[in-house]
Length: 209
Ligand code: ADP
Ligand code: MG
Ligand code: MG
Image (tube, rainbow, N blue to C red; front, side, top):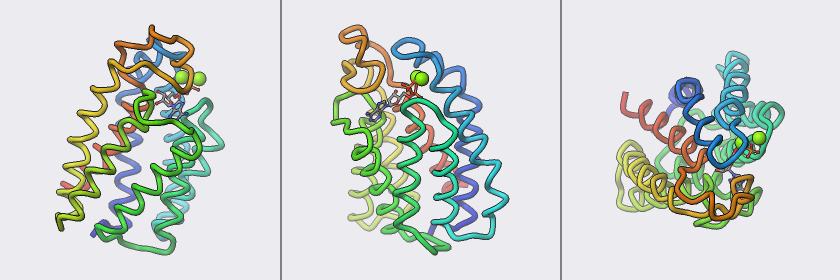
């Protein structure tokens, strides 16, 4: 089971992971974008975290929805609406829940990914966060279907995400700003894929603690 308290811890952990990697994420975006991904994410998640005391005693759906609204209204660029949609769709499948089973977690992750896919219309191989999220959710699904626990499934998801993140390096971007570079986008790790990896890694960290 993943508790409401662990969801709050995850959001805090992700926000601090973003803060610690703000320069790194921005440098990755400097290579193939406009050098603001770390800045965008840090601004958005700092604002989202500031809202958490207002929802500290609410259900998981309300918490995730609050995060999504803050992200949509405060992160500029592509990543704001995409992460906002991810959290909004995730919130909708866990409405009124105070704890999440393995199956609930799978639904949450799948709904978040589906939201990003519908909003951004990226395909696998387009060098976006989808290239990290999609294999991670698939690994999580497989582990749950094999009756593994949420922690074990998340371990598999993070392993898959890390591998998938490295695999964004040789890709040529087909969506977002990096696509304007054409072949010059090859040879660089995707910034949004990197933040997506950090999101999953911080969730695993909370589940393992
Ligand atoms: P912007 O490119 O508007 O400055 P950010 O730098 O914050 O926004 O985010 C860039 C990241 O957003 C990319 O690295 C990529 O992972 C992700 N991204 C861009 N477009 C899409 C899309 N259509 N679908 C999914 N992810 C996308
Ligand atoms: Mg950018
Ligand atoms: Mg920008």
